[in-house]
Image 1 (cartoon, rainbow, N blue to C red):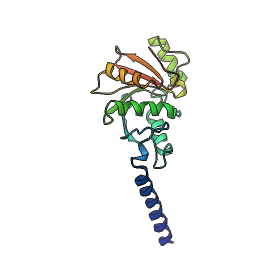
Image 2: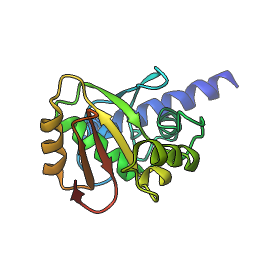
Image 3: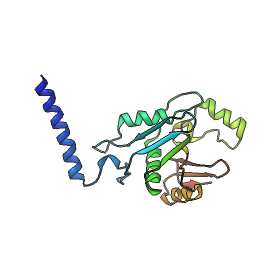
Image 4: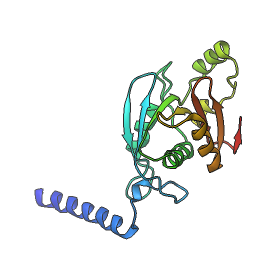
Length: 184
């Protein structure tokens, strides 16, 4: 029995190593559109103090389910603690932007998924928050990247022409979403 388990483990590791050699570049860093997302995302949630470093893809270029669960957790609504799936296209956008600005920086999460309750609180208190925000669907993120000027981060995001880009210099964050390309 022990021999069979070791043999399976050896075969899995051999298959993984072969895939890496055949691909010519790290397979775990590719996004769904075939581009290479490079280094793992290093994330810091400004509300909970939690940090993670995670790659989006496994060796076979599929979304890594463990990574997706980790990302859903760190991007959860900090107000209600509700977890909601984050759209993989939104994560791809974040990963592409991360690579564009150097790929080895910590990303600060201001907001990811928002529960309906929290979105309504923000609408009442701050105004300017959309009633049908893409945050409610796990399709939007508000971030900042320490060491990267917010205006430069905005320009990098706009240059990707991937999804929505909201610029909030007064609050020091950038909004990204997987909706149609637009800016405000």
